[in-house]
Length: 428
Image 1 (tube, rainbow, N blue to C red):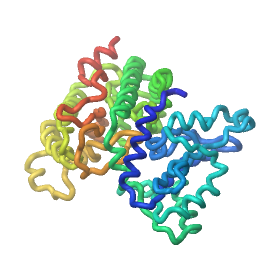
Image 2: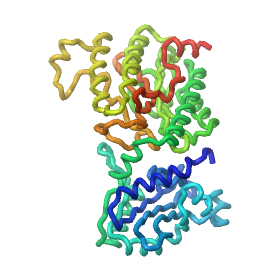
Image 3: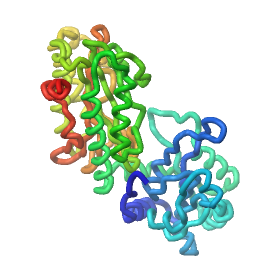
Image 4: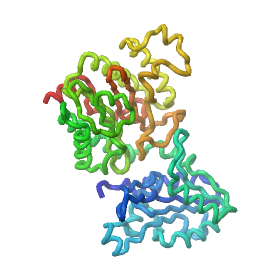
């Protein structure tokens, strides 16, 4: 494996926490993600269901987890179902976990092969009244196409219509949002790799190269340091495209005088780093680029200390929105008289800063957690203000990952961010 799974006790504790929140005589069932075909006998890269990773650490397809803490047979109170690593399958696809290895990672004593799932499920359902299932939940995202979890839930409800079904997400998501020391260590490692990738890319940037050449530098450094790859599709955007928030084509030539905005992050042990830096392609900011960059940087620096217990994303945004007005006035992009007369539902700064300042980070780069959730110690969030002046072809975003604490912790303190430091590194 590219990484060591987290400590077995971490997964044991997570399952105990879930069981402590469910109703009596209940059953919890989780499924792994699907493998998606690409063509012939080739599949898309597999990415495990984050909930399965959180509760078991098992990072392979065709996996089920059942928790039935009131089952009369103690051996059936926790069961992990894994793919049978037959000799024929291993010849074609390589190593898959044995029952002993799966038990060692997860701390689950009863490990069966997935071939036995349906027969065992009958026993589990008969001995349960309520069934907790997970479906992805995000108030800003409707999942299309439907997931394997959706298909399984539909099938189960058709076969066992008289059970009471419950949502697992309201129990699991708050637990996932509060990071353990093991998780923070994995996130720190992902952020360290992300920092190394940026430092490598910085030395390769120059006019005449393609954006994808810089993407390749980022990817190389991530993989050679043990990351599984990018935690999301990287943005490497030059010139006018710095003002496109989710630009991922990365296929343009970088020109002399352009800025280059890189939004990227390494994934290590399935935990996500997420960073953004904006640099001059020729190694020297123009006066106007520097002016806009330093306005963004001042907001960035002032916002990091706000990630304290008791805050929430709405409060972070309120601070940044007010500071954004001040900086946009300084930059000559807005006037105070116009701001005072603006429609509160459509604030003027949105022309130059159209996204939010923060999101939760963990097993997913946009992790579970909502904007009104109160920050608790150990939560991890992004801090990413930006200013985008499309009419000037200048887009600047600066981002790091922050651990909530009385003295918030920047997980990427060694990633260059000052104008002078960036210019000096690019000169070399």
